[in-house]
Image 1 (tube, helix red, strand yellow):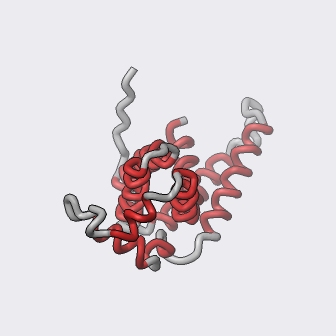
Image 2: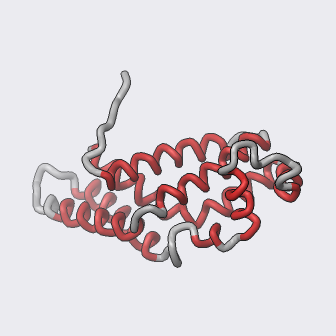
Image 3: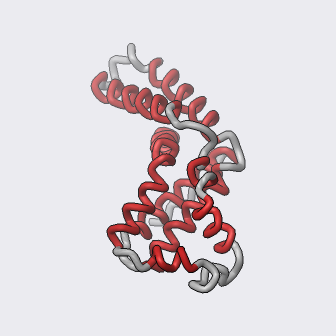
Length: 175
């Protein structure tokens, strides 16, 4: 069965785009080929482009708090299993705390990395990521798959709280 989700508004549309990019990233980062890791890294750049268009962190914090307040209203409902509700509330609190712990602007750690920004600048040019245009990037692509995987996850990891928040917000909206 095909499920087509129509976003309520631009904020939800942005969350759905980021969710889609995250799924793409997770697929390609777990592959072994340098070309697939190139796609994973390019996807991080796309994520930053989409996430940077709005004050996403603040929007997510507000949405998490809204969901928390909505769920607190169910505490006295005898038809709700308190253990399940408590688990979701704890997950919301942990996700909010991790999101608040993110330092600086979304993706700032990548924007401050000159090497990554040079790659980003070349990848937006069709055919711009050739070995003769980015020799240091080409050399990095020759590292082992495990090393590339580790590097890419290291660049992505500061964004993880953002995607945890997106995951829980979309899950609660869908349920």
